[in-house]
Each structure stands twice: as C-alpha cells, then as structure tokens.
Amino acid sequence: MSDAADTPAPAVTESDVDLGDGHVLHVYDTGGPGTPDVEALVVVWHHGTPNIGAPPQPLFAAAARLGIRWVSYDRPGYGGSTARPGRDVASAARDVAAVVDHLGVGSFAVMGHSGGGTHALAPAALLGDRVLGVVTVSGVAPFGAPGLDFFAGMAPGGEASLRAAAAGREAKEAHEAAAAQVPDGEVDFGFVEADEEAFSGPWGWFGSVVGPALAAGPAALIDDDLAYVSDWGFDPRDVAAPALVVHGGADRIVPVSHGEWLASAIPDADLWLQPLDGHVSVLSTAEDALTWLARAARRS
Image (cartoon, rainbow, N blue to C red; front, side, top):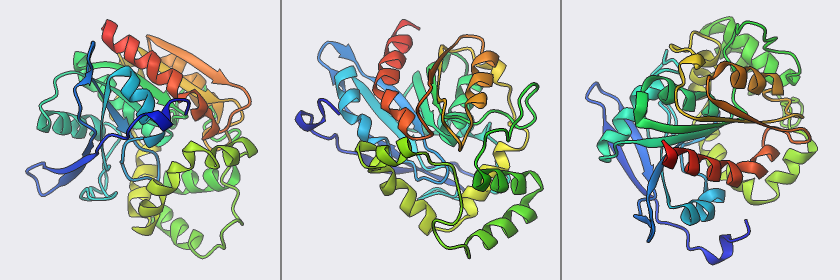
C-alpha cells in the first residue's frame, strides 16, 4: 500500500459479547476518533470462508486516511465465537446489531469479501437506516436466484463443496471428511495466477486469518456453506443503503455472474467489474472501494 509504511498500525482490542442465550461473539475493534477534521466512521468487516474475523490489515493505512474505525467479529463457530449450527445468512444482521450495540455505535457501514460479502448484505437489508452503505467484494449470490446458473464457471473443488452442501448437512460433512484425506494441491479450488500474485503482496495477510480457521476444523465452514445454499432469510432487493458490488471477471471461486446478479437485484448498487482479476486479486481495488464507501456513508 502506498502509505502503509508511514502509518502506524492501530491497536486492535478484542472483547466478547454475551448474547444471553449461551452464545458469545468475539469482537475486534481498532477504536480511534478518526482524523482531526473528519468524524470517525465505523465500518463493520465481514470475513470470508474459512477465515477468522480480524479486521483487514492491508486496509489499515487507507482507513486511517479516511477516518475509519474497523469493527469486526468471528462468525459463530470461528475463532472465539460460539458455534450456532443451522444459522442462516440473515443471522449476521442480528449479530452485527449485538456487536455495535455492545460498543455503543449507532450508525455504521459494512464491507465484506467472498462469503463475507454475502453476509455483509444481511445488515444492509435488515437493519434499516443504521447501515449507511455496503461494499460486497467477490460475494456469493442466492442459491436458486432467478436467471442465475449458480455453478457455471465455478472451479471443480468449489462446485463439489457447494453441491454437497445443497444436498444437506450429512452430505456436506461426508464431503469435508473425504476432502481432508486428499493431498494438498490435488483439488482445483479456482485460484488464478493473479490471485497467487496477490498472496505474495499485502493480501498474503489472508494466511493469518485462514490458518487459524482451518486449524479449528471444518464445522464453521460447513455452517457457512449450508447457509449460502439455503434460504438466506432476506432478499437482496431489500438492501436500501448505497451499495457497491466489486467482482473479478476471472473469478473461478465465485464466478462473476454472481456479482452481476447481485448488482442487478440491489436497488441502489454500483458495479465495478475487474475483467482480469480473480477472487483475491480483485482486492487491488479495495482501497478505492473503501473510499467509495466512506463518501457514500457520509452522504447518507
């Protein structure tokens, strides 16, 4: 990042939110009042599958420049958050409300990548004018969405995984058990050359959030994938906040048709297509997308 070397990384504080029903959410917060002339904007980050929920370090410098305070959390079953089998995508709205209420935050924006891009749509659709704007990057569209061939263009590894989820929990659990016996590198999950190059740069940060998620086993990943191919509990058409959909044209993990469908369904959505980018390399646009979000949120 252009200004990363000159910008001190913010301290990330961690805490737990007791939901009062036997479940806990583990929360991350960069805090900070923003810049002297710009009031801090809270942006809630939604992590992908499988990640833990630490906020996106490659965007810390841009956030400091824009006066953004990152808040994020481990989805149930990941990191320090209690598992909640059977959760739907809509549950992310209830979880976000609990997190921001715990921190004393009124209004906020949301941003997510991959499955996090999908989950970021839930608060934008269900929490009304508390949500000032949303950015979804490489997000999955609803299973069975009209006019969308859900699996078209998807790499074999990802397609097999989500087809198993569509067959139900037992089939998905069996798939993950079998997948654990396959040597690394023998399954095509869909990363393209541009993605591999991105891992060699700032977005190599993903190693720090994917590793702990995988080490904990497949249970949270299974819950995520089941949620993607089940009824989400809301309609993307109900997203009322300004929205930006960002997608790579070369994405083989979540094909670009998903981003195009979401942008067509969300009433007030801009669509940024990056024809040569894959699932991760499309994050080369993330600083610009964050700038878009800050401007849209402060206009709301």
